[in-house]
Length: 265
Length: 280
View: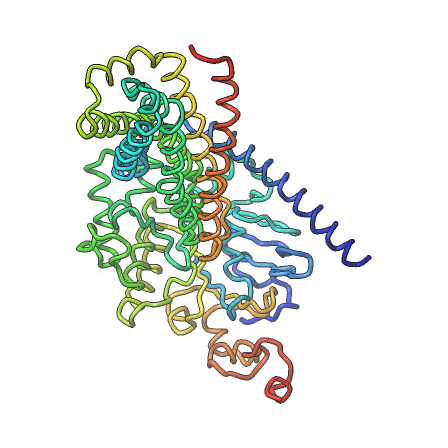
């Protein structure tokens, strides 16, 4: 009976704790939005964060996009050649990248590379009392530290996702046209005929913006809420990557249902 | 004159003769009910004076500074600055209050993504409309005062512990605050820097008309520069007095602290079982 009570007590505590944390995260988001004026009034703060989150993530995003596009073309050829539809290779690569892989894979990579870095940086600033020092200097750390990183992430990820898809399509071209010998005109022609600007491209952009908001919020919140110890920062960084990955995949399912359940555009 | 905690502060503390700037009235604070950090502290800091708060590690000295910065709120009692209760301040009043403060953190708390120059310039850029040329000159003057003008372009990671402390000191006084709070400013300093920083704290206090509160373990250096000393133990003021009375005191706590004796009212060992039991 005692152990049952203990289990129920722990379960209750973790549920209420989780709800309280969710509430804190919601209030935190409101505070970030309310205090975002400084970020846009002082563009150098935002540019620094776009550089840190976006430019420094370029290599991993571009290389991943290129290789994923190449693999897509190889795998796609294996299937399409059975039906004599290798001319549709461009369409297959582009749709897979623009609708799905571009936003999702770039978001997962972004969460691992930039999200974890943001959490670690803010967490370490908290641990070394840099945030407290700002508060004592009458500078709000949410306005000065958190909001620029939040918006830097939101601006960077959609651009990175677009670059990811572009490099993927080029990687597909290298394999399909240069390596396998698919007709270049068919590759680009099928692609431009099948990919709809609003239905495919715009929906892909919307997905990456939603993922960017989720990752940026999780990253800054976990950093700000980290226990100010080495273990605390380490745990917060891990939580950022895991929670972001799960959030991206869950949101992707929801968005895909909302956007594409009606069939082609 | 030296007093123990039972004596009447009002009758003899510096406030009796000078205008009070900072006052703690029967202040208690604890993170939990079971773990009280401060228990009924009374402390007075007159305007223009340099007051030291001393005591063993973990006795609640830094907590007093955090109460003054409104980083934490007292669970009971009143923290008054300029006659205004810190706990009663709204958000805008609290930020206005903090603009009058300068605080040196125990571990410096320098911004690691910025150079030494940018660290000192930070409060100036945040709170003033000064042109960059003026900020440049002011920053170099502050750095010159702590002997680190030549280190302006270095990052905090390139500084020794003592140098980082001096940079943090320069940042503390960047805006010539009304009240300067120093948390262990002498820790990690070599003897030359220690003396220079000590004298600098005294000179700044007098030249800029500041009021300073110094939290430190360094009794020798403190006795050279401060006007008044409070001793804290187990969350309470156990003794206080001016420099001469502290030096002449026969109070066991003061003597133990001043002479660095291992045995006395303050125990060196954290409460534990008997040695024989642990090694049995």
